[in-house]
Length: 521
Figure: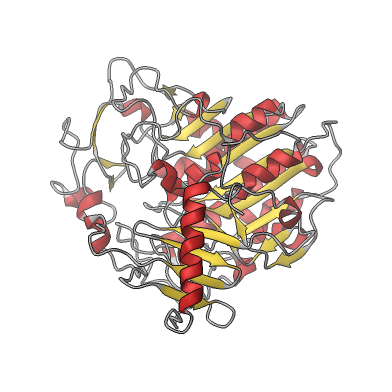
């Protein structure tokens, strides 16, 4: 509550709606920084589908701030997260290597740090190049060494892998602990009310969704029916920490305030900000001022809220005089999902809107809808104003920025990341020839517009909770091959027609998995 009151006081003049922020969205701000190296902001949205924004044809929801970005920068039609779930995608963006190299999967709320101290990362690379680095928002990459005591310093975490500052949702909005973590410490925690967290048994006396469904604001599936906080049941059990509990509806102001502070503090020298949204991940509980701003209920309103947050930070860049020297990358960690554990009428209120646009599948899926996501790149005076069909992977942010800031990469650093900065800036429509897509059960390989999906073995086990969801996964016991040139919805399997191509793409897949992209000819 202390954090929220601070943010609310600061933004009281800005709460009339998201579109008002466009007034200050200038591309010709006076420069207070003489740094030659650009500031970098990565907006990393959660579960935002290709079709969920206005520039990509959204219906029933408007994203005016993203419209401005897309109209002035490069908007991509074939850009990808590395995986169709969040933890491996985040791991890949920050390390420049695919998540399967670290067996990255969706982590529990008490999982140890997945990226270990000493591992080369995007922020540590930028630190070497003279950048101050910060992360604000959802983390979900694990913390500590496996048995976190939330009442003491929580580490290793972001500060041990290259970030100078962090303000985190430790895991996800649907997992305990439901507290903020600033650098190493839980915010507003009182010594007399320590926190305990368990993912295998109940701790404390807080009500749960199973025991007290009458206390819930929305129904949840069994996985999400443990400790109730703010009227919503979560995954995992938690006791204590009453003074430190977050309120979901306050996320946009709390996180945006922290990001604004980071920009203000570091405007004189190059900075890197990884702004990682909780939106539009479940539970979807947008702030009151965004409710009803779409025709799609909480999921659509959360998209409006997300757009406002982007606009607010873009406005701050102008206010601080650094807009013209800031490279902005907007994208999502994986494709869309409607029912992901909570009954918030996302499917029922969809109307004519198609979250994945023309694509098949979504979050968890190996089809294009699982990893083909919105991406907009904007750097005033540097990016072309264009729609690009270049084949792009988020994993390439690492090597592209390294080359931009003249920071050499070690032999085994970011082994799957390629320098495609010319494509990011819209100076060419050519980027990757090959691109790997990862899901919970298999991988796929893009070669230009050909899409090869590996067969899944009979003994390949999938998490039980996936079997309880109405998700089109795309897993088959035989290989699949699609020509996306005329079959972007992946309806016609052409593996039988092109057996030589299937074999060649399988061999290429194995080479890339073994050697990485930078070391495979």
